[in-house]
Image (cartoon, rainbow, N blue to C red; front, side, top):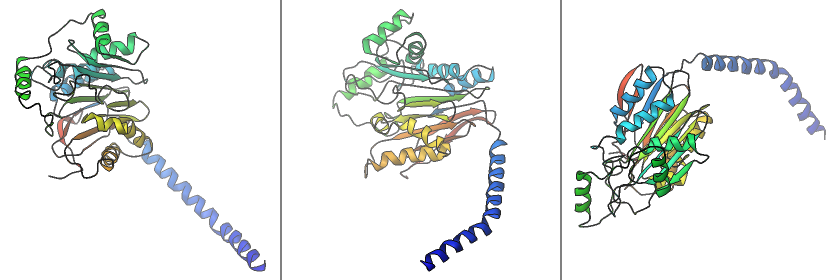
Length: 331
């Protein structure tokens, strides 16, 4: 008992001796850290997108530079690629499913957490625009298949043949073997995800795709799924994904990255952790690609992927750049 009382009294005395300078030190450090955070200037406006879609970021930047909203910027940026018949991963000219039908998926999300999506929609050239109509004109988040197509017609969208001659010829050639083996960074290069922060500091994002070439009819990946292919939190930042959507869905990848940024990770650190989580569930697998990009509230960006070869475009007052991305697997 005497020994216990001695230790107790000694501890109290020691605490009294060190508490004042320790508390002062902690206070000073807190003040310094607070000042460092408070004086950081945001890098806005800014827009980024998956892959080297320079026309998409150029259009988004045009909207932002003129004072437009981040929501309009990401929609118009995505629409540029949906309308490009030479881009066989989105919109008109997208690769068909194994039955020869082009089905499109897209979603959009604004600064207030409002979102809209269309899944497995045929005959409409700009699914991201229909997704925005779902967000703004219905009580729903998602419309799929024939229902999404009918809704688009009701909103004035025209019926369009999405299967170009080039994509049709490639599909006919594929049917000779019917081997479903996506090529890294080619057939997996199937999505444009685009994020933007406007002059007011408000964040929005959009994601659009024709999905995996020669997929099963009805297949939907991560791109139109809020939280998987895209997630926006105006207090924290935003993230979007490209690649094999099934694996992104399994980890709710974009939501995960935003939550990691909420916990204090940089966009780069968050993207790296997102990829590592996926690879932890796919040990020894090297036959697929996933790429994440992210931006935080300060306009800082990050990206990471599984396989070498992924890049992302950025446009800000610092210029228009195609940025190489580090990968989990090395060449």
